[in-house]
Amino acid sequence: MDRIIKITISLFIIILVSFVALVGYTGYIDHAYRSSLSSSYSYTCTITTDSPLTNVTFFLPVPADPNGNSPVIAQLSSHQITGVPDTWTTDLYETGKATLVKITIPSLVPPSGTTTKNPYSITLSTNVTSKGIIDTMNPVEKSPMFRPVQELKPTDCKDSATTASGGQCYTYLTSLYAKYEADPNAAVTFRSSLTGKNSWTIFDPRTNEYRTSVYLLMFGEQKGWTPLAGYLEKGIGSYDAPALDE
Image 1: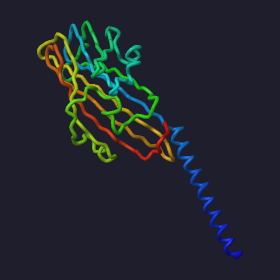
Image 2 (image 1 turned 60 degrees about the vertical axis):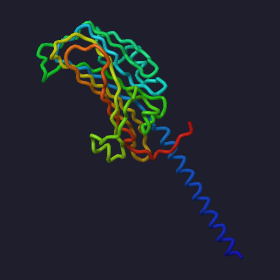
Image 3 (image 1 turned 45 degrees about the vertical axis):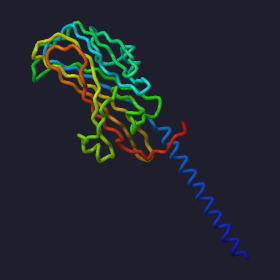
Image 4 (image 1 turned 120 degrees about the vertical axis):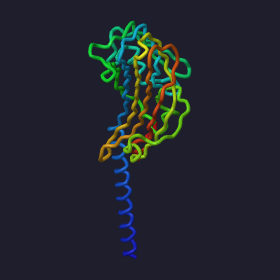
């Protein structure tokens, strides 16, 4: 009888110790994740030209989620975007389908030495901390994108590292408005990109992210809306983090 009691007590102690260890481990994992978790957006917008442009007006897409919330609206409104020249005027517009920034420029004159092979570029950029976790797996449905997102189609990833990390890639179309006077041979390019990234540390650093970009090459004078080629990489990185109770 004593032997049975001893075995029972030993088993109870083992179970209790295992339970306490599991609770402690789970608590550590949860605390490490919560205390180290950070989410941020990185945004760039580049306009390049090899010739002078005059009477310039752009309506450029600003990344926003389906509800119109954008991580860069506050910076645009307060003129805190790095790289905006003093001669540029920026105004925000919400159309219901897209968030746009109107840029007006009296003239955009490249410096001496600008050529087709060595064009003049102006880059606007900002990094913004997100108040909440970014949905990097379903950005089209839940996170900022260059909208409207049209003709979304799966495609091969340009970077093999994206595929290796489990990411998926897509092409899509959106649009911009451009109006300016220029030489018929003038080449103007527009590029813009957004990266949404979550970072945390549980024993080792971990991240997940999505990246989206748009691109357009234009020649000569412009006056009207033009399709923009979009590219999306989503679901890049680690997704084994514990779920948080919001």
